[in-house]
Image (cartoon, rainbow, N blue to C red; front, side, top):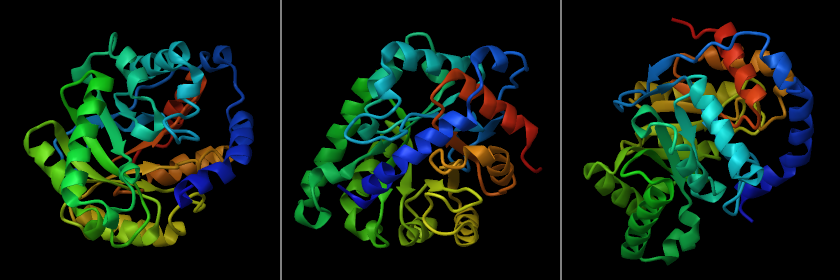
Length: 302
């Protein structure tokens, strides 16, 4: 079990309980208040536009399943459809979440050209990077992206990230994967490439790496489930933005452990000048609605 997976497992019991307390509203009560659509914003310099808030699919994710995939097709596809109907156009997936095929079903009623699809490559399936030949790593990457496109039923992926980086030297260790993704970007099968980080040194490397278009970064005011304390992470992400990176926030509510402070968390995220958008793994339609209301309550600073 990787360090990334261990952290997710240890957070599960407490996070789930807090989620239920923090989002205990019924769908009927949620419907009493109008739900404003999220702003549509540019994703840095990538040329991609997407909703300011995205629908995540990886709550307690690993081994190609997550809380979202465990909902089953009917409930998860209905959640996707509800989010889209509310104005959410950004959907965040990953190979290890097992949610690609669920979104394929959603695309039967959601126009592909109206949404932004982000997914992530779990390169660890190939073993330790130093022990796998570069040609094998490149071939593995090409095959994985082809499989992702088949699973989602799309001829292109908007954003593909190297998933869960925990080494400050990942830019050297994963060079073959980076080259393969760049080749696919040149062929327009991918629009933007980047990383999700689960280590502060990895994040600092991402902020400086010319290859990175997009950083998916853990950020909240309390430093919960983050790479370091907020006052350490914020300047690194601000520098990454100055370096031309697009920044997507995740763990906005600290993997569910901060939902009782969700106003504080959303206000904090909305006050970060460098943050292009954020992804939150809502697990019910009332959670989607609550998050959209909160987004509107604390509009992003001009």
